[in-house]
Image 1 (tube, chains in turn blue, cyan):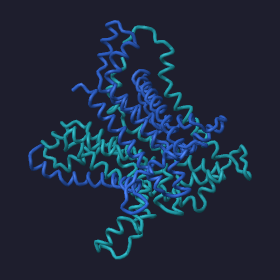
Image 2 (cartoon, chains in turn red, orange):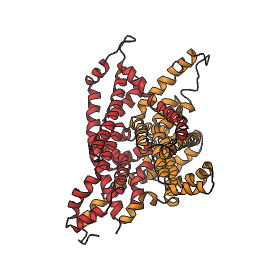
Image 3 (tube, rainbow over the protein chains, first blue to last red):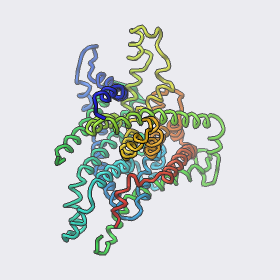
Image 4 (cartoon, chains in turn green, red):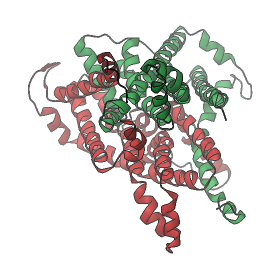
Length: 258
Length: 291
């Protein structure tokens, strides 16, 4: 199937992919351009980005987003790892996978609303903790699937060999399994962190007085409208996402033996 | 496979994710359904088994919102499925794994970037004085700005498709890639045309992926409140922003009832997926591990 004729016939497909990608990437350009534009037309400036650092609300949103992303980036992969192991070991794999995928099947607004009801009933005031819980729930299916996929590419006989050699469960996990599924775990960590940084609907239902970067963008957009500073903030969120994805890919390439 | 007695602590640890989902998702969803039956008395809610919220849902404008939400969600999901299937098929069958990986990453990045950023930009691009209209008019293709580009069904569909289509490629790519190539060769040897092979082998065998991707798209489109607000314009109501606006006026039973309807629909579809399709194609190797 690699003869020149069929290769030549592929260009319409590449065109479709290019158009689809253009629809996704072109809308990122206006925010970036607007964030760099000065007051005079044709003038370029970084002052709106500088302005961000002088806006206490934005700084607070940065701090909150960063803390939440770190926590979700730890909790979701950890729970995902346990879930993947329980799928393997507890004897009801289909059921556990179904439960782990549930957050994917509950629409965002409904999930935010339901969480808000629960926290109100329990008398838990909205806080960073409630945001972390909701976002961890949202990231959990993705983290579980990524780690599970890594686990299926790994031969369980290695574990058997470790047990035969006298290793305990923990030792076998740490020395044999963990290095082999490491790429899945780093993937789950970066995916969870990025999902956390960008999550808006579920977060806005349980945020209370706290703001993350996206909820700040969302509420400012609705109440005040667009401004160069808001564009700068959007520019930052684009850059942050791209940097995390690329650094994960580069790290992954180095970690891969072949 | 392990002779040592299973310590109970290990089992509890392994059950943690299940407990987490049960407490923070299953219980809240049950709570939503309960609240939807509460009776509203002024600003207070009385414990009752009242169908008032559902009645107000069926009568009048909200039924129209529900109908339109379903229609828009189904349209957006169907269009996304077609686009994503074509792309996934091409990536799984026609290009090298390395090239497929790069393209998949390119589709992942915009899915991860907050879609509010993208939707706001669409308003800049598609408005009456936006880039698209200006360019079309300068090129002499149109005389007056196109009105239907923004604050329209078109804009909402564009917003929904660009938000959820990229990720729908993944389950489709996985399910098409998992089809044994020997079936395709056998089909070709027996004289079937590529189209017949696609219709009788590839499509049926990739259905679990199609269903998973479709469900993912539907959930996204039905749970969306930002897209209709930004791209639909004033008065464009879908179920997502209707729920948030009933919350804003503190009508919890109504918000809960709307939410319950959507959740019930999704759970039914999910159950159908679970019962009809075998997850063994994905879980196969893990199932074998149980000794």
